[in-house]
Amino acid sequence: MKAKSRKYQPKTQMRNPENVSATASISPDLGFFESVVSAHRELKVSWKQRDYVRVGDAAATLLALIPDNQNALKLQLKAAIRRGDDTDLVATARAAAAIAAPDVQSAAHQLAAKRRWEDAATLLLALPENAEKTEQRETLSRRIAAQLAAAGLQAKNEGDEEKAARLWQLGLSLSPGDAKMKRRLRQLIHAAAVKAIEANFETDANTYIRTWHGVLALSPDHSTALKRLATAYEKGGHNEASLELWARLVRLTPENPSVVRRVLRLALLTNQELDALVLLASVGAAVPDDKIGEATRRAVFLQLREFLRTHNYLLAAHRFSVLKKSSLDLSRYDNIEERVFRGTVREYKRLMKDGSVKESTQLAELVLDIDSNNQFALANLAQYSFKVTNFEQAVSYYERLASVDGSNVKAWIGLARSRKKLGDLPAAVEAARRCLSIEPGNQIAEQIVTAFAPVA
Image (cartoon, rainbow, N blue to C red; front, top):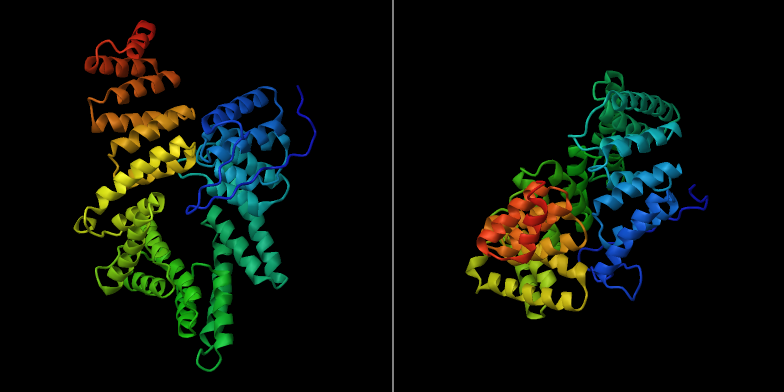
């Protein structure tokens, strides 16, 4: 059956970590898990019928419900390639880069055939380090790098130095050994830096800022340009602009304590303490145990306490997680951890009862982020993963739960059922037998052993 030749209209969604109340569904009459099952069915049927427009729609619907669903990510990309439709192909391929390297490479080849060299390079660079480096991929990388080098030289000759620098940097990411491209880029950046150094902030602040921005436009990670501009904006009282630049610098040098302190000091001035702690945790930078560090932690702790007071346990758990990563000793604050856990469990049950599955799942993930051995979070996330047919993830959660409490019957029976779904019958039988050793007579475990032990 041939795919229908109608225009594919990709679906989009917005995600806000501080507000996850908006949920997508196929029908208002369906609950979350029923919607997931329906979307899976639609995706399977449309793929079988080779209706790649329907596949794209079904995948988008499923991803709106479960943004990291691997099957949907893979089939969404495969369908886009088979349609020959490069609308949003870069975003679609990047989302699947970690799990569908061959298809991502095919997408890059398709874009290169249309002379979309930058987009093709972006996809190849999105491939994980452990992706197989085939001869075909290496040949494609060299071809794209050569085209980027030529396009960069043309842009330079036309006076568009910013475009030239962007193309050469991308080309060097694919072909680091290209000495000619490297020399041309270095000369371009050096000329701009010399011009910026000649400017004086005290006598002409506008020229100073403009010329250093010129350097940054050519080399986004230029540490001198970042420092000069961050300091200039801070002197001019533009604290938010300065913080943004120091934040870029801390990503480059997370081990630099002076840069960390500048980020925290400006975060305090702009009421962005939470974002600052999240940033430092993400890059592995230590929060100093000085007045600035303590003031930042204290500001976030006050938010935590306020959210507990108003029973907003999702945001309270988020702040608790951030504070724990910032090395704040929370044990000294009136059983705060117990209050957070007690409140999140109560909130989780309420959300599930109301059918707010996304919010309850995020809450469980936050609890697990705080305590990696929390049995309540592990059990509920394992159950959620099983229900949305993410059996690999279910196995991971059930294995963790069993390692925390080897006598947990639900962990072993859940592991057995998940292994069975994945077709790993020997492991399913083994888990079922472990369950029977704890609870003889468990009917599900006995059924698995009886049915599959002879063939396992």
